[in-house]
Every structure is written in C-alpha cells, then in structure tokens.
Length: 430
Image (cartoon, rainbow, N blue to C red; front, side):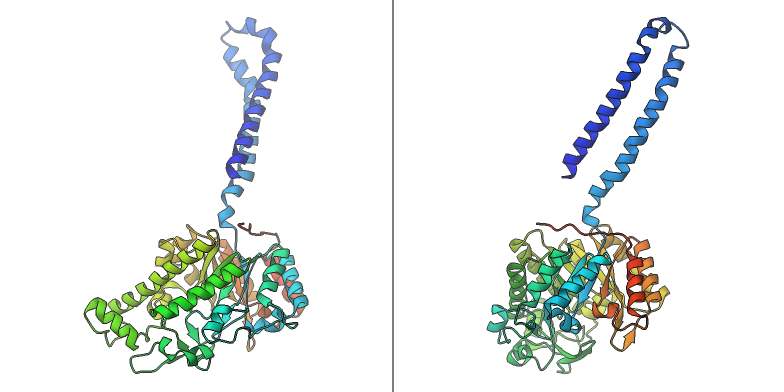
C-alpha cells in the first residue's frame, strides 16, 4: 500500500511541475526571441521561474512530511494498552460490562487490551488441552455460561481495539492447584529441596521450563488460544521465566550433568549456571515462537518482562537475546515504581533504546492496587516522560484505572482523556 501511494504521489508532483512550466512557457513565448541574445535573459528567466519553483518545492515537502512518514511509521504505532486481570473478573464475566469497558477505552483513545487467559494454573476458556492435563475444563465462565475470552476479543474488535491474550502465570502456579498436585514430576526445586517461592500472587511453585512435558503443555495451550480465537497476538510476561534459586530437581540435574560433565554449582548465581538455564529458556521461546508463527504468521508475539538486569540475573529471562533473535514483535517493560527519577533511569536504559529501534516498545505503568491507590499526578508524570522518549504505555490494570483512586470518577477519567487527546488506533493485521 505504501509503494502504491508513493507512485501516485510522485506522479502528482510531476503533473504539478509540468502544468506550472507550461503556463510559464506560454506567457514568455512572444518575448523570447528578443531576450535570447540579451545578457539579461537568464536573470529575467530565473526571477520569473523562481517563485514557481519555490511553490513546487514547498508543496512537495509539505505533502512528503505529511503523508510518507505516516506510512513508514505503521509498524511503530504507539502502544496504549491496559491489562485485564482476574481482579477484573466481575467485569469480564458480564457482557454488558465488557461492552461498557471497551467503549470507555475507545473513548479515552486506548488501542490495545491484554485479557488474562492463563492464571493460577487454570485457563479462562474451554480447553481440551487443560482437560487432558487434569485441569477443570472451564472454571471461569461468564455470567450466562459464555466464553469470556471470545466475548472480550469480539467486543474489543467492535471498538477498533487490538486484543492480545495474556499468558500471565507462565511457568508459575499455586501449590494447591490441580496442575501442581496432579503433576509433581513437572515441578522444579531449590537446592535445599524447597519447591515454593513468594511472589506478588502469594506462595507459588514453578513448573520446570526444561522438562519436555511442561514445554508441550505450555505450547499446546498457547496454540489452542491462537487457533480457536481471532486474536491479534499472544503475550508472555515476567513469569515466563524461573527464579534463579530453582533448577535443582532430578531432571534438570541429570540434563545439566549430561551436557556439561559437571554437577550444577552450589551457588545458584554462578554465571555459567545462570547462562545455561537462561539459554534453555531462550531455546524454548524460539520453538514456541516458531510454532505460533507456523499457525498464524502475522500474529504479534509480545513479551512484558521486568527491566533487563533483574530479569536476566534473578529470573533467568534473557529477553534482550529474544529480541536479537527476532522472535519478539512487541516489548512492554514493567516499571512499577513511584519515584520519578528511578522510573526515568529505568526507562532510559540502553537495552530499551535498542529494542525501540527494532520493534514497538512500551512501558508498563502501575495505576493502583486494591490497597495501594496511585494518584493521577504520578500517572501523568510517568506517561509524559515515557512518551517524550517515543515509548508506548500499558497500564496495570483495568479496574485500578479509576476504582481504587482517591480522585472521583469524573476527575480520574478526565485525567486519562488528557493523556491521550487524540486517537491512535493500531492497524489489525489480517
């Protein structure tokens, strides 16, 4: 489409030039024979033609600046997103509330929603894959028994929003989930034998990302979503990883010993041990990307990790390598901190700048929690500094946009309207 427009535009510029010179030629034709031998001929001709040349150049530059870059910037459309979590379930399960939510987001000039589809060891949709793994097939039904994922996607599209399901829990699950209890052989351990860690979701266990059956489960669930729904993408966050204390289970020890001829180091932060485990997760993500793209080649493969230094060293998640391997189509880095200087320092890191040159890149901004309201002044300052750097934004999470605020509803929504005064819808890739 860009090249077709460019040729039409160039043809129009040639027509303007020809028409302008034609009228100029007629007006000077009868005097031309007298001036041709004159030393003043060139000066008069230049003086007469110059205003027309200036006009043509001005129009060309104006049109070029107005249209051509807009076509070139299509892959860089600004991310204006919001996550919809299990905490939004009272909205997600109600068709009318979903419709109102999508309408409000469209009115406030958002362009992307990230609805949760994998949380706490359960899926948010009817799943044959989950049922085979011993997980209840359809736990999170809508209020009339409907498929809430299909409803959110359809209603988002009706409003011109992209819908990118969010595979929130990644390799993480509660220890009391059916998944963890039915498949203890899929869980990894710490060196002391412990199987749990404390996260924002409470106490959790970790599926072993190196185990082939775990990899198969995750891949099958992702492909089920991609195949059965009209999604614009699929997103993985900071839980598509493994805390660095883990990896001392029997399967991983055997695999590491076989490949390196050494037992895993006692120090879980040993650089070679960190690199080996991180590379294994990267290799899985490459295969997962290939499987997704084989099913739907143009789908957005989105990742939303923590800032790089923490993600790699603490979570074995080398997302910068993923970008360099060209398996990431969209990056949103979670930066949930109230201090503005710390926020600015984090979003200005070189790895974010590197990603920004290659793919649409945004920053995840906290808008509040049930027990921790975030003032609109903080949100505004973080969004402003983010957009000044050419980065998009995604807010965590929908209900906290206004429900957990100290400001009243009208003031809060007016604040978000002021953040995005103009529409910036993202083009769907069919």
